[in-house]
Image (cartoon, one colour):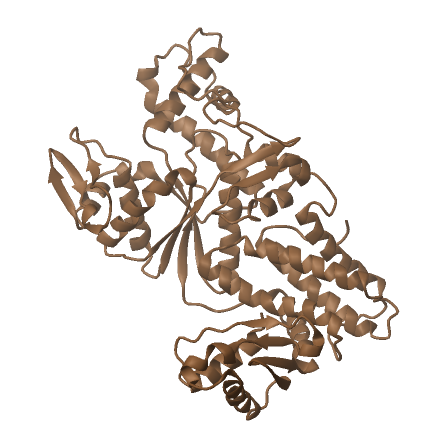
Length: 533
């Protein structure tokens, strides 16, 4: 879609005060019908009270009053308007890409987002679902930063509650078993190799210190060291994914002193009923009120989570929005948290992205995974098998609303069947072409052929795409764009002799611009751009 034509048509339509008019601009299927065509005259007749042809003439007259990069405008029955753009329009795009280089598509903004993602319980190794959250969250943060939004990456450590109790006891049992003590691990506990690994790390650190100790006498100590070891492993895995967080926030820290009771007083809608403390969420569209403090005085999971969001908002007065990336099992939790934000005085400041599951395939069959049984494919194993580039690219190549079928066989291929290979190979091709040529001053682009306009149009769309992603969080649009750009570039390369061409400088300048955009797009996804493949 051509932004120049859209912007100009919007400006002209606004002079007619045709409010609410929606039109489309499409690429003409044949150069004989111009570069772009619009139905604006057809859909505006109810505003203009004229026939489509008369309305089109009104619009064309407005266009012709000012000098633009539109060379010629044609009217086609029953009211379509075809636009022919001057070569300068296309050459200016290529020049702008090269001039901007790594700053192409960069923008300025006063917005500041807090982006919380991954936030897996430190009860075991991260697995492939966590990898999806890491890839999406980091790629979104990169894109937001490029469009001028300041982003604080945050990880919420769920280091309190029943899951931590289960982790600690499992590690204690495996520790005792490593010394030959006969003790059984409950069936409902964690049974993965990550627990055995954690127990071995504990043994390495404390030797036989716990050997003659009953669990109840050292429970808090076991919890602390187990969480510490697992959290360190999580941070190592995040480094493996090239993901860094500015903040790691401990849920356990909320229970210190009077943080929760003090913050609870600032929340509207808190009521006492049946000896328990509730949040009156039914008045705001929830199907039932939510318990915050049980009759026995213990907190539900919901209360510390509300307080945590309160802290995130109050920590920085410049925060424009909180974005949370949650797993599919949290979808039922969204409404109550949005209501809680409203009752804290921060309506519409929370945006939640829910990720669907990742299904691993090998030899066409699904690999069954269970964290509890210890049959998951861990994040580190996935990265070691297929590489960081393929892992990150594959995990953001589908909408967050869609389940991912991660084909391990396809991910291992070094062919055009593998989408990340297509994109990286196209970038490598741009570099090899420039290295092969003796022409080095690639800053001029004087003339454009019709066969090159589609490719240049795709380069023009890149900044608009990034802006779109920054507004709707649909990161999967970026790898889709890069695949399409790579294929269009490969088609251009196949149908045009570049080295030795009379227009070699122009063609190589276009090649250079394509390389800049492909590399920039890959970098936002956290994927490398090898110059040789």
